[in-house]
Amino acid sequence: MKLSDFDFDLPEDLIATRPASPRSAARMLVADGDALTDTHVGDLLTWLSPGDRLVLNDTKVIPARLSGLRHRVSAEGETAAKIEVTLLDPRADGTWSSLLKPMKKIKIGEEIVFSQDLTAELVGKEDGQGMLRFNLVGDDFDAALAEAGMMPLPPYIAAKRPADAQDKEDYQTVWARHSGAVAAPTASLHFDAPLLEALRNRGVQFTYVTLHVGAGTFLPVKVEDVTSHKMHAEWGQVSAEAAAEINATKAAGGRVIPVGTTALRLIESAARSGQVEPWEGETDIFIYPGFTFHAADALMTNFHLPKSTLLMLISALMGQERVRDIYAHAVKNCYRFFSYGDASLLLPHGAKTPQK
Image (cartoon, rainbow, N blue to C red; front, top):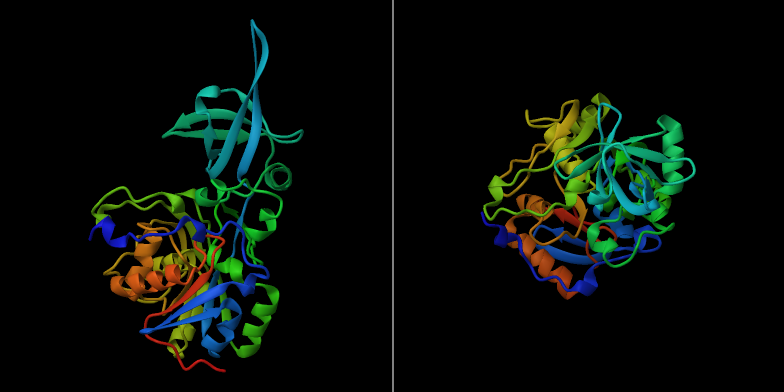
C-alpha cells in the first residue's frame, strides 16, 4: 500500500480560511452506498433516524499559540528577542512540551514574557521541542493563557492569515468541555444549538467522549509504505456510561456515527475486543485499508489533506476507489476543504431512506 495511492490534486482556492456562518449552513456531501448527494449540514435531519447515535468529542482547544519576548543583559546592554511558542502537551512534571521559534535565540534557564501576568522558563530541550514551566497553574494559568494566547490554527490556514479574536469562537465546538487539545475536532464545528435541538427532537442520541487532539494530527506521512508509518499518540477517555450507550445502540439496531476522525479513532481504540469498553490512556491507533471496524457504522467528517492518515482512515471505511470518486466529486463541485471547510457524511452500507 503506497503513499501515492492516497494522493489527489487539490486547487489552492478550495482551502477554507473561515467557516460557514451559521455553522450548519456548510455544505455536506453524502456518500450513501454508491450514490452521492449534494446537501447541507442542516439537512442531517433527513439522513439520521430515531435511535441513531452521534459520538461527539468534547475536548476543548486551548489558545496554544503565544508570542513573547526573551530579555537578556550583556556587556552591550539589554536586548530582547521575539519567541513564538506553540504548546503541544502538558507533562506529568507540570511542564509543557512546546515548539519554539527560533529555538536558537533562547537558552535553558531563560524566561519568556508573554504578558504582564504570564511568563515561562525554558527548563529543557529534547527532540526539537522546548520544555516550558509557567509561572501560573490551574485556573490562574487558564485565565492568563486565554488572555495572551491565540488559537493554534492548522498550518494550511496559518500560512494564509494570522489567527484573530474570531477564531477563539470559530475554532471551538459548542459543547467543548475538557481543556487539553491543540487542534479542534473540526467536523464538530458544523454543529450549532438549533441543529442539536432539532436532532434531539428527531430522536437522535448523543454520546460524549474525550480525545485531546495533538499537533501531530498535522504531521505528514513520510514513508512510501504507509503500513510502516508510526502514528502520534493522543490522550483519550471513553467512560463506562459512554461505552454502555454505544453498545446499547448497536444492540438495538441503531447506527453509531462518530462526528470526526478523532471520535472514531477513540471508540475503535476502546473496541478492539469486539465491543466498546471503558477506556482511558494514550492511543496511537492507525486506521488504514484492511482495518476491521467494531464500533463505527458511519462517519461525519471534513475533507482531508492528500496523503494524510485521515484520508487513509476514510479509505478503510469506504474503500479506496470509492474515496477517489467522493473526492473527485468534491473538487469538481468546489467543496471547501480542511478544518474550516465543508462536511461529508460517509455511509458505507447505505442509508435508510431519507425523511423528506
